[in-house]
Image (cartoon, rainbow, N blue to C red; front, top):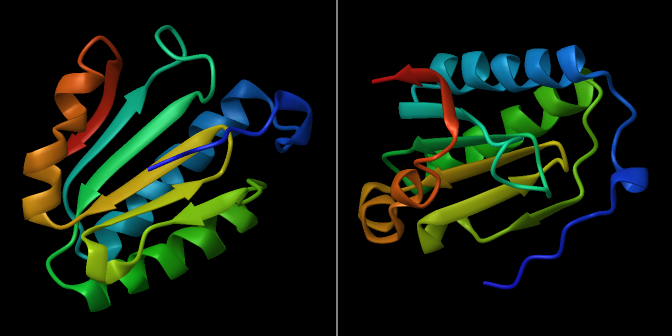
Length: 130
């Protein structure tokens, strides 16, 4: 998967507290849509391309699409600009890149395979919801 990251100038001009609030709002939306094992990571100390990463699991492709749609709407309402979207619900991994917040929606198999939690284990865990 090739990912390009928008330069800071192309991102939403939000204050750090607004970005944190938008990330937490995304976690709330994911929880409301029955996503499981939701993890919000503060990656500012370990990554230069984003501030927060949200990792979650969905049971079905339909749930993945619903999550992606609702998270896109919530991001826009919070002032985040969707730079791009990668993957499909049927692939088992969908990525929503809002610049300052990156959302990963996995099915269980793909999440176990890629183990992003291990990759970003040096990041600060802000929220973990089973």
